[in-house]
Image (cartoon, rainbow, N blue to C red; front, side):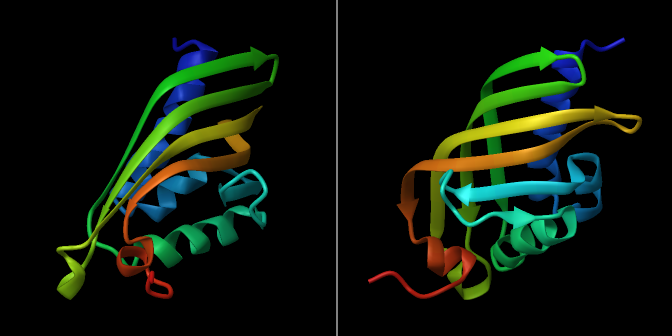
Length: 147
């Protein structure tokens, strides 16, 4: 039987696999239905609800080619049926089509709050604070071109 810490780490890591495999249905095993996320900084506008979270993720990743989300240095604290998780993230994105020569890479910190339910551990609150970016985010993931 897995420890709670291992089960929480599995949920956090499943997120990376689901994104890189574009397996959007697997995100039901990652996020609670009422989860809230903030991408880019802890002050970023919140995205609320698992359906809107998946839509937001897809608005970026559906525009690019392959990606690789590498997570490590997990710190997990369990308190009954709640948990907190912090880990480092390094993410590489490759452009698609005529932009396949473009890349965008970032690294930062994922901070999660999780809750245990009958279905298992789920993220209820997540932030990804980007500490460094390399490449052209907009050329790879969409949006206005960088100057």
